[in-house]
Image 1: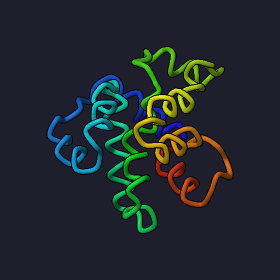
Image 2: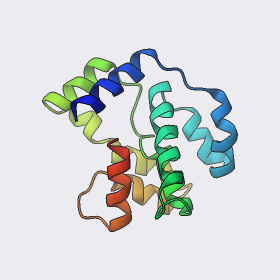
Image 3: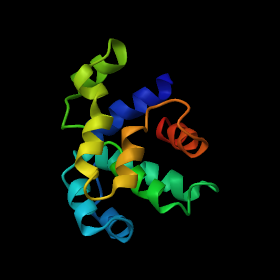
Image 4: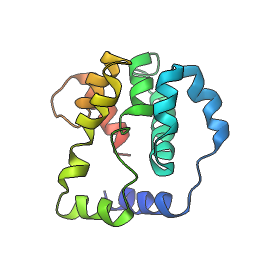
Length: 140
């Protein structure tokens, strides 16, 4: 857990999103979905694209188009939060950050209801087996 948090801080501070990744992203998302993805923060794009790569390697989820889209859009409800706010959320909680699944749902429901529902529940325990796998990959 601590190693993954250190990796997140490093990614937040130093990594750049490679726009070449958008070639694959555009193969998966519709133009409306891509518009949402493209408005996400640099960190969320990096995290989401890395999660997509894990999904595509996973034997159970790799052919599931909704979970591919979920990988890219699950955190679209997060704003461009500071590193401090993200650390605060981990240490003591943060209502605004904790509400991001509902905000993601609101952004997605009229574009792709299935993915919107999955985004709304991507932190819920016991949703279903596919979501459990998704959550494990999201936590890496």
